[in-house]
Length: 354
Image 1 (cartoon, rainbow, N blue to C red):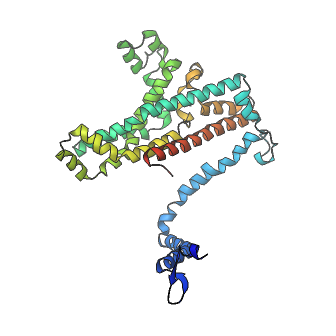
Image 2: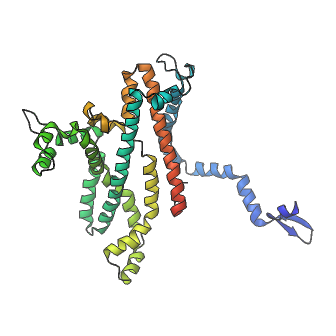
Image 3: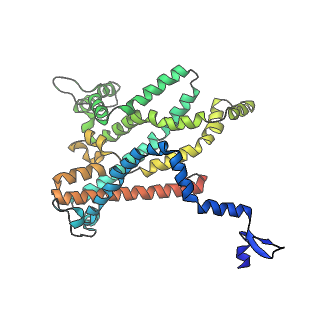
């Protein structure tokens, strides 16, 4: 007991007893009155904590309360009874999606493959572009010119999905007797990349062009907005680092390689982990507005698969259960990807989310 107590007690030779050191007494007092200190801090800064209430309510009503409906994955779907009163069906919906071998299972695996491919292409081609843009903004010396460039690249992010998809559709639309094909289709045909028949038929009607259109439009829409985080990390670099590199004879490329990139590496790793976590969470709105029956083979993702099946394609009740099961599998895989990416990043670079 004395050996264990010696870790946090000091021995008083005069009195012959163990007693708390002043430092340990302070730590014990802080731990004993921890919640009292927390309460005083909240009362003192109550205005700041009040501003958190809308965000907490949003997460509560749109993130946590909907989790109750996930019970529908394991219940016999019934549009009349609430989820809690429905009969337990086990993993029947998951078995039908994964192992049935029928048309529905085939469509689900196709949607899962398309989801992964679209997300992987977005990670490979879409993730580096904001970093490059941030490096470009950092090299623009004129504040006015930088502001103009940033506004032009940020602007597409603030356009609604409906407006964005409508604009994309107009640019690559199919030709008709009244009007010709979209301007992008005509330009590609004029440069010889596609034939006149393909341009007239509409690029969005061809499965082989959907992924390219989706990725290019996604980069155009979000690259500028995503570069804000990286640009903020770049401008936080101390000027003395640049001065030291210049003294050593480093040019602009060498400064980017040996000063800028190592300084923002932790930010890149964190953003990469979050991006991998959402690898399979493709918003269905854009895909739903761009795809059609001709492009299901390359455009149908898990979210649109769940949407179609939840509105009665295989029965209104059963479709809801299948859609919930499909989305739950998608989210579970995304969670596992976050854990795996965070573990790898922690071991490789000592930078992680947790």
